[in-house]
Every structure is written in C-alpha cells, then in structure tokens.
Length: 515
Image (tube, rainbow, N blue to C red; front, side):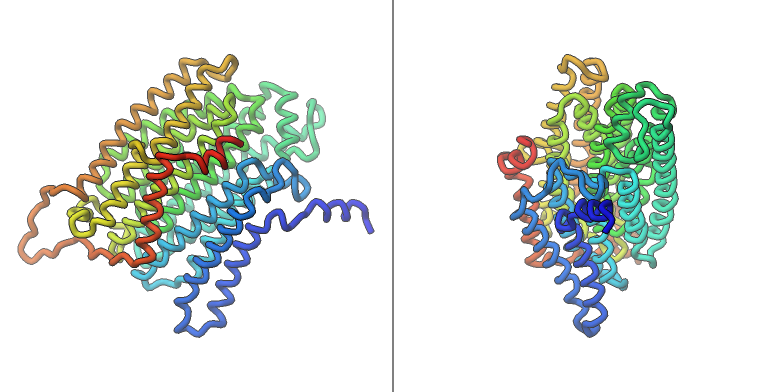
C-alpha cells in the first residue's frame, strides 16, 4: 500500500472532531425522525434537538481537556488551540439556546419547523471547525457553510416581506464579502507561492507556511494588499465599519432566534478566525494594527451614535452589536503585544452570550406573529404585567451596557485592561498615545450606550406618554406569549449567570485567563 496514503490516513484522527460530527449527525437524525415519525409526532423533533445538543454540551464539559492542543490535524487543515474546547462549548450552547428560542418563535408561524433546527446545528458545527482552521481552504469552506446557512435562516419566514428583504440584503452583502475575502486569499496564495521570493511554499494556503513567507518578505505590496482584503472580508462577518451597512435591516427582518444567532455565534466565529489571522499576519503588525485601530474607533462611534435614534429594538440591538464589535476589535489589537488579550476577548463573548440570549428571550415572548415589528412602545408596563420578564430584561440590558456588578462590566474591564497593558508594552506596532486614544473612544462609547439601553429599561419600568387611540383604532401592541416553566428556568439561569459571573469569575478564569 502507498506509504503516503498510510501517512495521510494516520493524520486523520476523526475522534478529534467528534463533537462536530455528533452535532452534524444529530442534524441528520432530525431529518430521519421527520420522515419516519407520524405527522402527529413531529412536535417531538424540537425536543430531540434540544436534548441532543444538551447531551453534546455536557460531553464537552466532561471531556474539557480532550482537544489535541497545538497538534496539526488532517494534514495541517486543523490546528486545535488553547481555547478550542471553550469555543466548541460556546457554539453548542449558543445553538442550544437558539433552538430553545426557536421552539417559542416558530409556534407563532405557519412554517416548516424541523429544517430550522437542522440548519442551526449544521451552521454551528461549521463554526466549530472554522475556529480551528489552519488553512485557507478549510477556512473558506467552513465560512461559506456558515454564510449559506444564514442565507436560509434570515429569510426563513418567507411570508413576511421584511424577512425576504433582509435575506436579499444579506445575500448581496455576503456575496460581496466572500468576493473580497477570496480575492485577498488568491493574492496571498499567489505571492507566497512565487518560487523567486524567499520563504515561498507550494502550500502557501497553510497558515504556518504563509507566516514563514511574510516573515521573510516584510513590506511586500501584494502581500499587504491581500492582508487588507482578507481583513475586510472578515470585517463583514463581525459587522465592523465600514462593512456594517447590512446589520440593521437584516437584524430587523430575520426571525428573532436567527437575530440572536447572528449577534452571538456569528460574531464569535468571526473573532475566533480574526485572532488566528492576526497571529498569521503578525510579521506585518504595523499594517494590521493600523487597519484594526481605525476600524475599531469608527465602529465604536458609529454603532453607539446610530443606536441612539432607534425605536425598533431589533435595529437597536443590531447597531449596539456593532459597537460591541468595536470593543472587541481593540482587544484584538492588544493581542498583538499582550497574549492574554485573547482570553479577555473570549470572556467578553461569553458574557455577551449570557446577556444577549436573556434579552432575546424576552423579545421572543413580547413579539407578535410579525416579530420584525418590535418597538420600544411594545414594552410599556412590561415590569408591571410580567415582573419576571421585566427583571430578565433589566439584567440583560444592564450587562450589555457594562453596569457593575454584571458580567458585561467585567468583560469590558478585562478588554480595556489588556489595551492599557499594550500601551505600556516596551515594543508595539502603535504608540502608547494611540492605545490611550482608543481607550478614550471606548469609554465615550460606553457612556453613550447607557442612554439607549436605559431608555429601553425605562419603557419597561416607568409610565411613558403614548398617543391616545383614535376612534375605531385598535391597540397595535401584540399580545405577549405566556412564559412556560422550562423557559422561565432557561432565562432565569442566564440572568443568574450574568450576576454570578460579574461577582465571581473563578471558573471561567480557570478555563480562559490562566491558559
């Protein structure tokens, strides 16, 4: 037998990606269950999905140290890192919570339900692979799997014109971002594979080989252009300025669980691959730092200022999510000189997951059949009529705003501390003044965000004037969905975790900050 085939087979340890295979296998099981179960039993499929994902999450937590950290797998396509198990658990937890919200949201729609859970799981499995990518081919295939899945999910409620509009806009901007990313990859592949240049490699799409080429060829124009294009393509996925234009309309038109999926998992996957690419591009640290610094400052300011005028809460969360991407970008910038910044970013994302899903859980119950129409006025007297939802909303928004002692405050504090440490580093790609300037912009952004987050809390807790209904007019506020016991437990745990994590970071610090 060919020795090369034997070696290739030895480099393909399928058990190393068992969680990803399990999630994809569960998606196939749901399709089979839909075929063989009688139509009256199709309501069991969401329960099977939730139970299966919960089992996978528990398995990841039990086998926390199971990743082959630092060992290239599948002939260099994958490279599990120090945070691989955390990211796997993050994406499975997010997929689980999206499925839980989907049970409530889809009950209001006359749409197929099984396919929703299948696509969510396939997309999550692709995100898990994307976070471990060590090769542009795997990165692009995994990223496009995620993107195509979101094309379907965003426009899932095809009877709603706003949803179809959101799907079309996401398709157009997603195609543009893929084109930019692919053009950048081709430039890097071509220049790094040029045999007349030092450090060239026949496998220049491999991140290790590309890093060696960039180190041997500082200041190469084509390589610099390729790096900028690749960073631009990733910036689309995280919603950074100037590639954020799609976010408000897509967030508003997408079903609420999908909006939550975009806000949390898609953003986390984008930052996971961005941290990997920043390390690969570190020989061009000056260029990378300049691009990210400009992007971060503009993203923080645009997101917060644009959110001030929003009355639709889905658009408000979309634009506030842009500002959160800006805060995370300054953490990425700090990671060029302060390695622990990556851990601070993941802590921030975990706190963001807890707060975001708590808020989106409330939105799912307040929304009517047309959940694209969610206005601040719909939350009037929420705390009086449903104190539980009012309390969850206050904790979730307080954490997003960065109010102590909630987890969101600690996430921002840790990221800001790493930027402060980067400013004091003896050697760095930017001057200390640039880091301090970015910190100043971030603090201004936090202050601005308190206004619109607390405006939402005010709508839920305090009496506000509303125009009286004219004769024959009906109240446009949709009827609120009763909160089931299992949903109370889920939202209660999310809110409790935000409070506990704000006061005590021990377990998460053990997983992240000490690695």
